[in-house]
Image (cartoon, rainbow, N blue to C red; front, side, top):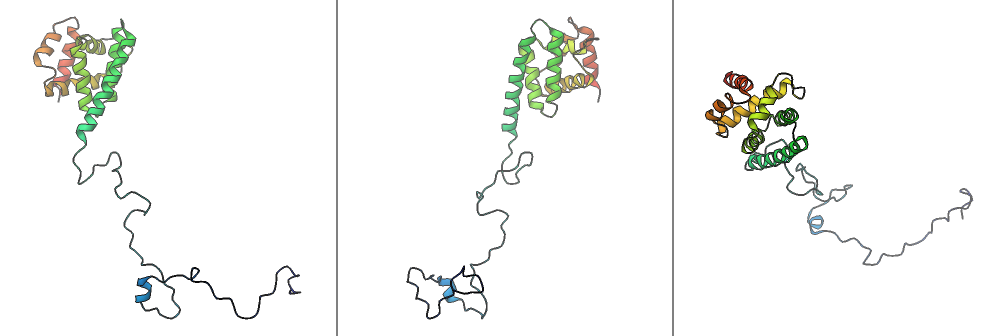
Length: 198
């Protein structure tokens, strides 16, 4: 024992070191055997250039949402289907306000405003309201003076959605003419005038 370190560590053994068994020896790789070593250098595995992903990531990463993939086909139909499904689910909320056409009109216009960047879902909402026979009354309520459930952006969304629906043939010029002579004639005349504006 050494007196300098307080006797805590044994002194190194002097004499020949025991030879390691063959299982403890590290086997040299064929690449390491073939490559001549310069004095003072260590053998490392071949350095690979960075490929933009980790070895732990899957080889194909999903394209981030909102960024179109350059080589993949467009995902627009899937997005349209999803938007249409969302619109259908939202339309079920109208039943909670049965007997309140002003509230239903406000809710429908708010939905159209929420789907402002999704023409397919806007057309779906208009299509469903027309099929249910509520298009005339609900959109008439949106433009009725004094409806506290409606704000100006919602009216603009209704006009935009109707424009899309007319362009796709969901709502016809005959429908618009009929609505402008019905119970909400004055409101539908306003809508018709707004549709004609550029």
